Length: 201
Image (cartoon, rainbow, N blue to C red; front, side, top):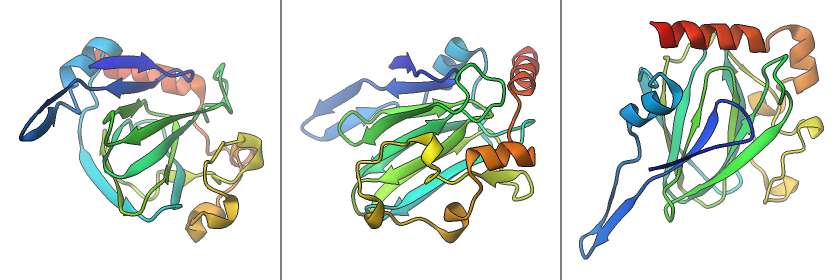
């Protein structure tokens, strides 16, 4: 498996080796030992999620309070999606920056996001199926969002705005600046301290 760091610290693209024969294809889309080797800690799997989306569905930007946050290991099992990572950690050297990775059934790539990062994805085809492993269970009290349409994020979306399908909750979420003023964004120092605690444990 090829593990490539993205421009935002704590985010990685993982491209698996695929074995193909006349029966089809086999691959390992998650390797906890390699994550531990690369990051010093595994994902600590607590929940697995799957969503199926029409073309143009934009979900996110979602994040959870740190601690414990929610690390994610995301892949596409049908269709294709643009996976979007936003650095929302106040004080981070790359605060406010966005990176994106194409997830599809050709390269069968995955993305790993550490705790404290914002996550969204855009379905590029009908019936796009996104599956992701997470390090903590869903807790509505600790879950937050920022608007994926916040112009300050400058997310480069390959589907026109008038064709996007965004939930009311996501569309009405605060901008990054508003979320910072509300005090709901994770702090860079807190995220690093928590990551150190997890690795030591």
